[in-house]
Image (cartoon, rainbow, N blue to C red; front, side, top):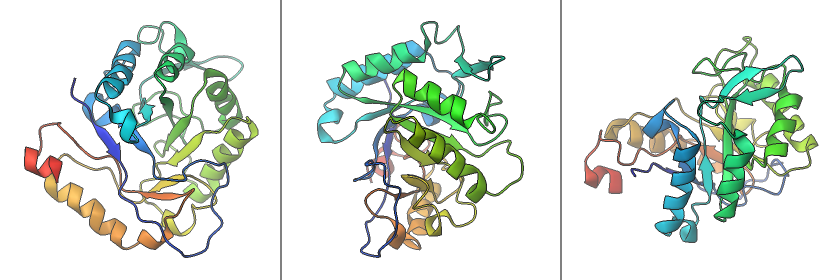
Length: 249
């Protein structure tokens, strides 16, 4: 199975700052994310098979520990404001998938959005941060990627701390990955908010896009440190838009 490796290009700095203190992100997060390879074509079997592959390939032994499920898992929100997964693709629920990933010695990540709907049009978390954080914690989620589509027009600086506080209130350590697309220079303000923050728009599967992410992060490298990292988006590996040499580079 083709895999997309999620490796963040970051550099630590000696510049002092007040980072989010949830005990996570002492080193940059490494793992796999479903979006670039599968988009909305995900289900429980795919996520479980990916966890199997990471262990079989020995990637877990070199630091690749997160198995992160991106957009399109959520389906409905009930009258109490609680989020529910798509029953066709996740018939046993999200906890079943998280438990399987944990059984392999890996960590499980999930996706939501700081807007009314996700980028793919599924229910977002804006206004439901506490409900969703409580659900994530009860399911055993270890990582949240939090996107920025379909929001209310308020700046990320206002919306993203709300989910930070909701996650922290659960008592479960959940890595908080802010995907605000680099709006408002997050490297300069997001250290107390998230464990990582997107510093760029979405990457594309071509050499120019990939190298431009490194160039853009060169300008803010000094804001990264243990507990909070610049995120230039996921690496594209094996998706067909670059040569093998470019992917390896």
